[in-house]
Length: 377
Image 1: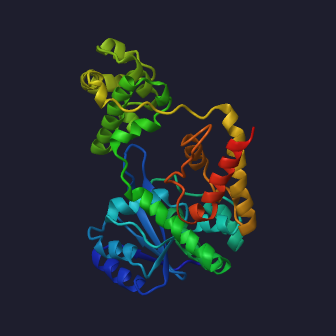
Image 2 (image 1 turned 90 degrees about the vertical axis):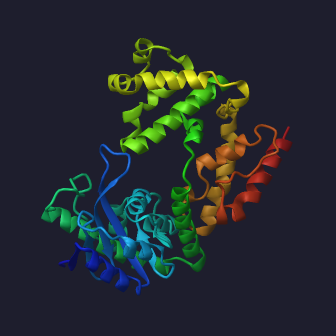
C-alpha cells in the first residue's frame, strides 16, 4: 500500500503541522543523521507519523524550531520512538528540547516479553508481520535531493512506528505502561544530566591501577579531551585516542619524543597538541596531595561472581512473575555498584542507579540477600 507522504520544508509549514499534532494523543518520531567526523550528530531528516501519514521534515531548510520544541515538551502528546538514545541527541541539538512523555517501542517489547533490545525491523516483523527492506541507515542523509529509496525508507519508519505503538499499547497493563513511560523519562533525564568532564577519568580503562598522583593527571587529560572534542566538534579519539590516556597518565612524558612513543598516539595529536599536552601533564602532576582524587576501587574479585549470580536471580524471578524480559530488571552495572558498596562483609547501600519501580520492588530483596550471604559460615 502506498504511503501518504507530506514534506515540511519551511518554518510556516512546520508551525502549522505542530499546531495540529498538539491535538493528537501521540506522534511517532524518528530521525536520520550523520555522525562520521563530528562529536555532535548532524540532522539529515526528521520523520513524524500520526498513524495515517508520514511527514518528512527537512532540517536543512528550517530555521525556526520553537513549534517543534513546544510539541516535544507537551505533556498531553505521547512521543513514540524506537531505541532512541541518538535520536534524543539529534532533537536536543536541533530544538533545545527533549520529548516527554516518551514511549520507546523497544522497551515496550521487553515489557511484553517479546524480546530484549529488539531491532526495529525485527519488531515490525514480529508485531505487524511485515518484512522491511534493507535499511538506508548508512547512506548520506545530508545529500539533496534524497533518493527515492531513502524517502521510502524514512516514510515507512514513521508510519510503521505508529502502527507498532497502536498494537503494543493495548497489550500493556496500566502498571507496565506507567513503567515504560518511567523508563522513557529516565532516558531523557540521563541526557539532561551533563557529565562533569572532571568525573570522566573514573570510567577510563584500567584507571583503578593508577596511584592518586597519576589519577590527577588522568583526570585532567580526560576533562581536556572532552572539552576539546565538544569545542572542535570532532570525535573524542580525534583529540587523543582512548588507548593513549592510561599510558600518558602512568608514564607522564616530558618531551615530544617520548610523547610520540606513547601507545596508540597519533602523529597528528603530537603535532597539533603535543606542547599543550606536555604542559597539562606537568601542571596536573605538580598538584599537592590534598588535590589528588581518591583512589579508585579495584574491580570485584572472581569469587564475587557467585554473589552477582544470586542477585541477578532476584531480578529473573521478578521478571518471570511479571511476564517480562529478564534483562529489563537489574543491570549488571547496578548490581556491581551495589556489591562494591560493601563487598565482602557489608554493610551494603543501594546505588543511585537503582531507581523507581525497580528500587521499590527489588531493593529490599537485594539487601536481604546480601545480608543472608554475610551470615553464612
